[in-house]
Image 1: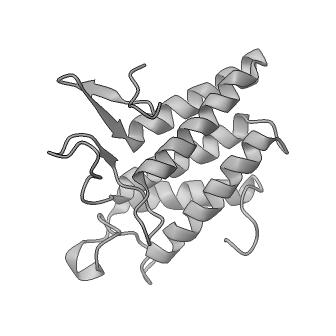
Image 2: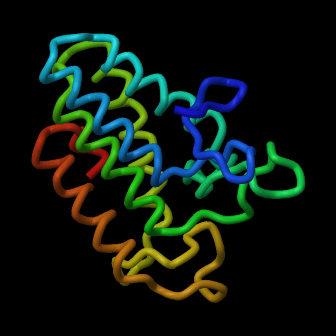
Length: 172
């Protein structure tokens, strides 16, 4: 797969590497599942390493939410100027589903659990009093509207993470 200079998986568009959080979640789930089926721990390492790289490169300072990606602006290192709720839903889907395949109580699952706890806390801070997440949760509520599909994905995967015991009680 194409990768950027730091080793993060990317798609190539007109020869340039683009990081996208929806691409990340598909890839990491496949890596975790391949490790679970084959017993080859290099797949687990790759899964968690990609989450680490995307966490380092796409998180917005201060909010803990993730940009939808980077690579397509004039400055290819610049984050996309917003995050969106469906992208946050895809990201939490990738984390929760990958954890279902990673060996419990391993360094891989411990690392990903810490990312999930951190991200879940950021998501809960962005949730509105109505229980919804807005289309662009990094913006003030008056600048972005409630969004049903993003809210549905986030709520579902937060509930699934709680049911599976991936989140500590104080997070939910």
